[in-house]
Image (cartoon, rainbow over all chains, first blue to last red; front, side):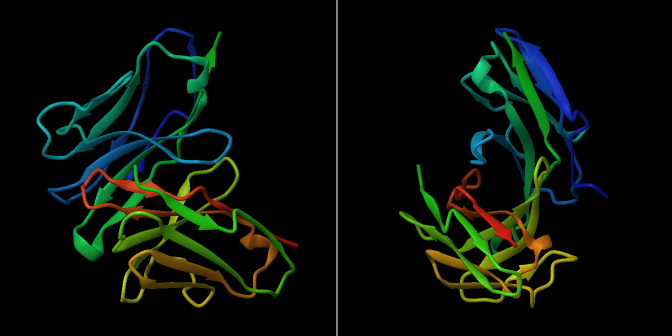
Length: 116
Length: 115
C-alpha cells in the first residue's frame, strides 16, 4: 500500500489565487510527522512546512498552511496568494519510526503551474 | 539553517566503473542519513537509511551489493554505485535528520550519468 498518496499529477492556479494540494497518508505509528517540500527545476528540495501527529493546531508558515485532518489521514497544503515563483513540483512526505528506525517516504508529487 | 553538501554534484562515468558519492553534514552531527534516487519527473524513492556506526537498512528491491553505503562518522555518509550501468543513471539525493522532529536537511543532489 502507498504510504503517501498525492492524487493530483498537475495543477494550474491563477496568480494571486489560493490553491490546495492534496495529500493522504497511511501509517499505524501513533507518532509521525508530515512534511511538504518544493522542488524547482534546479532539483533542490526546499522545506515548506511540517505537521506533527500530536500537534493540536494546523501548521502555518507564511503563505503556506497545512490542513491537517488526522481522522481522515489527510495533510493538504494550502498556498495563498500564489506567485509565479511558486511554479514547481510539490512533494508530501511522512516521517515514521524512532531512533535508528526512522524513515521518510515521499508521495509522487504534484506539478503546480501558476498562470499570470 | 543546517547545511548538507554532496560531492560530486554531477558525474559521468563509463559502464562497469564504480562511483562514490559523499554526503556531509557541515554544521551538525547527523546520526541518521537517507539516500534517495529520483528519475526524471518522478518522486524521490528511498533507497536506504544510513545510521552512523551500523549497517545501512535497505528498502525492498534495492541491491545492497550494488549500492554500498557507509556511514563511518557523524558527518559523513557515502554511497558507492558499484559496476555502474546506464540504468543506474539518476539523480541521487541524500538527507540528514536534525535533532528536532521537523528537521530534515537535503543535499543538493548528484546527477549520475552512466555511458
